[in-house]
Amino acid sequence: MQDKITALIDYLNDVKTRCTYNAAAQALGITAQAVKKLLGERRPEISWLVNSGTGDPAGYTDEEKHPELYRTKRIIKSAEVLTRNLQWEKASPVLKAKL
Image: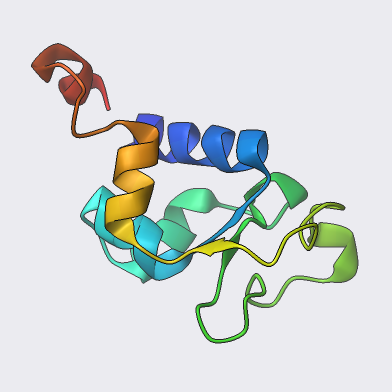
């Protein structure tokens, strides 16, 4: 699971786009609360994961937010879109086992 979390964080940092905790949770097949737990301490590189209602990372100070967090209004809200963008569905069975 940690490999998938790492791939998700790498992807969001590469595209510099926010994503809701719910979309990430659904794509990972776990709860939003479990996603938050797996992310660990608040830091800029994981601040791309946001609350669906506010579009902000929950409880983050300005120093904990990525400097480019609000560069676009776009927020990934769909697990299907996230899964497609990460190409998790198209991964080979061997790669899926690693993810």
